[in-house]
Length: 214
Image (cartoon, rainbow, N blue to C red):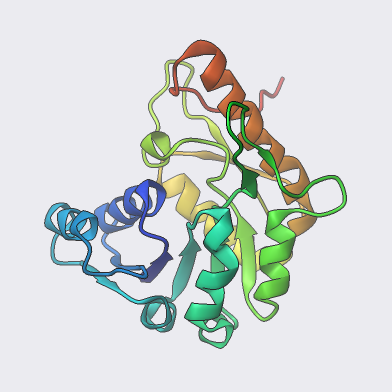
């Protein structure tokens, strides 16, 4: 497959390397596709990796990954042109976080709305699936924990899209828990805050969630 990643930060780069390890072609979209950090990523990623602008990346993608900071998400979607993502699966990795001095991050949306639902409204003709938003980028691909593989919680309105994203998660070494329609992002995005707060309390970022069954 051709994977188009909108966003060139640590999350996009880590997921990009994971897709390449599985044999996919990956293009990272950025406002600065020739930046030094992306040149360094290309050197690591090899021949199946390219970079480009947001619109070029959206056209390239069979499956798209939205991995932007929340403050730049709407702009990135507009630059990509939603029409280029119509009918495609879009994995929404974003969290609608607000950062203020001397306080932990908090959610910009919640209770009656979510970032995932907002992304689906911005991409009304795409199949948006929230995933990979409840763990740090270092453990997104092939997570190794003493208690066994953690679970990735996903949600979205299209059953076939969720099945495709579940397959990607499993190929990256995750168990998968389906949290229902895209409104499930109202639950998954606060899990990011819980993940962050635990990291701040312990000084360690090597943790993930798992749903236990009896």
